[in-house]
Every structure is written in structure tokens, then in C-alpha cells.
Length: 102
Image (cartoon, rainbow, N blue to C red; front, side, top):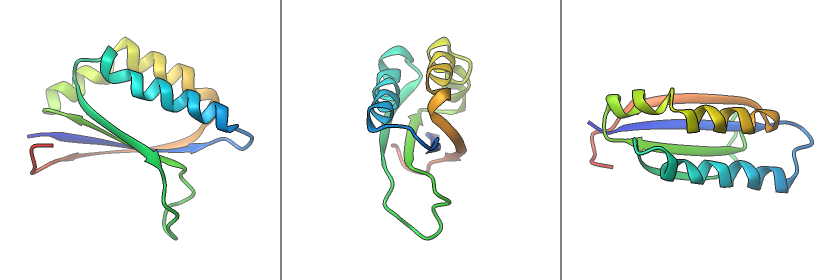
């Protein structure tokens, strides 16, 4: 059963558009480095009263929980977290089983 790994990002005050682009670029590079990722969709939020000031959202799709478990400790994932940490104030991670194939 596919897994959707949903990540919401809140950038630190003072992060520039160039910094945001660095985060996005490194994020979109992950599927080429981590075979467990089936696909990734990312984008800037559409303002909503309940968005809790998060700035961007990312949805990673994995074929199953085993693939998600392979992704979490993967060196490229850890490197991404370390590289982007100076730009990120907060994040929310939420994993769901999907009833669809994607």
C-alpha cells in the first residue's frame, strides 16, 4: 500500500528567496539519490486560516512502509536535513497509507 510522507516547512525569518530555491533544488534532487522515493511533489502554500504559518509543502510517495524505512536513515536524506537546517524554523511530518496507487 503506497505511503505519502507529507512534510510542511516553515522558513526562518530572514531566509531569502535564493535560500528557499536552494532548499527546493536540494529537495528535488533527492529522488535521483534515493531509490526508495517513487515520486515527489512540492510547492508553496496557498494561504489558509489554519495553515499555522507553514510556508511550503512536500509530498513524497513510497511504494510501502519498507521503502519509507529505507529513506529515513539514507545518507542523502540525512545530508539534505543537515544542509537545509539553517533555513528551517519548524517542520511538521505526517505519514499516511494511501488507498490509491499513487
